[in-house]
Amino acid sequence: MIAAPHPVAIENHRLEIPAAVLAAAAGHGERTYPEECCGLLLGRPLPDGAGSAVVRAMAAENEHGEERHRRYTIAPEAVLHADRAARAEGLEIVGYYHSHPDHPAAPSAFDREHAWPEVSYLIVPVENGRAGSPRSWRLDGERGGFDEETVAVTGDSTETEPER
Image 1 (cartoon, rainbow, N blue to C red):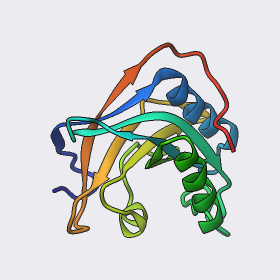
Image 2 (image 1 turned 180 degrees about the horizontal axis):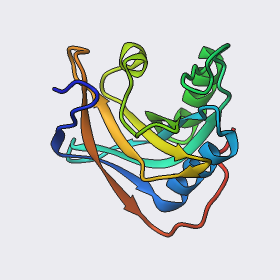
Image 3 (image 1 turned 180 degrees about the vertical axis):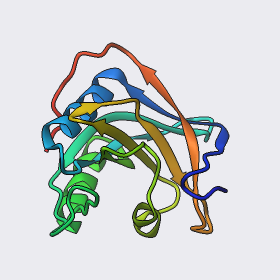
Image 4 (image 1 turned 90 degrees about the horizontal axis):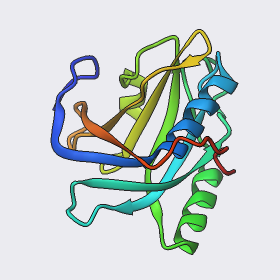
């Protein structure tokens, strides 16, 4: 368990994500800069129980009224839509992604207060409109902080737009 600024890796825990999905999330962050982007990660738990395999991303509107440059909110209807779409494909919501404009890819106190355990939180830093290296986090079971998990990139990096 860690507080947001002091990462500790979860041993062998990983988020497997296709390069194209990662590139799409980064592109989403660049397009919405200087506001935060957000979306959902659809996939399956890994067979060994040590993380999740992302199949695709679904972009969501940032519904946060004010301070969208440092906060995001996904409407419950968007989560329900994503859950139904995932289930129709034999998938589930395995995580969420969002950007941090002009801030590092580490969870904020706001992120911690609004996070759910057992899902991944992929954060894409966007500095001056350019996406940097994303990091992924999981909330510890006691809501005391986040643990960093390995981001394992698979496949090629041909960018595709996250579906809505």
